[in-house]
Length: 227
Image (tube, rainbow, N blue to C red; front, side, top):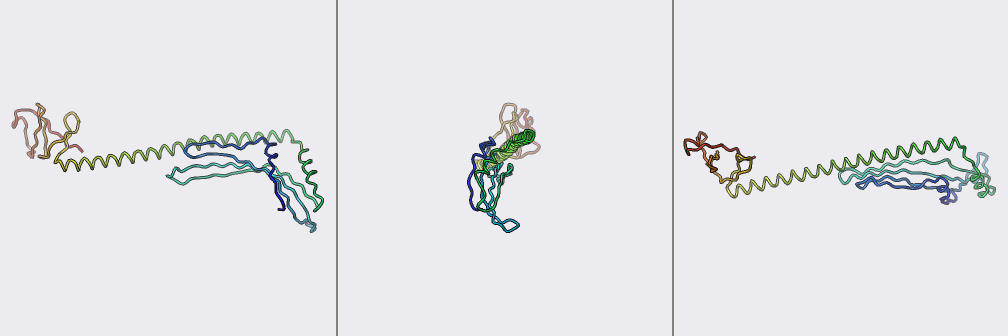
């Protein structure tokens, strides 16, 4: 390759514009367009020194999915080139200006252009659908990760609270019981059984055959330990 020059006019002729869409959570989808013309030297099959100019436009579609630090980031890249223009002649005889005039004089076959536009609309439609699906997958994944993090935090907090409560109960010599109304009752450590009497008072005893009516003259309810 002897020389190269950008051809932004190629891009203007197609009407295609670069665009980027935010998919949320650090993910995105974008298309990039580039066009240029290069000059090459080569030898023909007969050994003659030749020059060739090649003009090309390329579109690249790129999708980036952020793993949010919980999984690997992913990047998908695909591209396509529109029909290229080239002209060649023996060295010293290639007329670049004439080549450009010939390129600009080309008239596109309407039926061919219709097929190309149909293909382009199909690609755009698939791209939009893919963007929506990626956005949904990304949102669901991040919600799942967020829920896992929240549950992990809540489990750790609950475990710490239970450990703290157990340590506090041990230091204060307390037992925890489930009262008749379902609430937690903190009572001084005593017997293996705790009863709530009808007058609202409590009895702690190691006697597994304890009868509150015989011992206190009141009916009562035996409480369960708070787990």
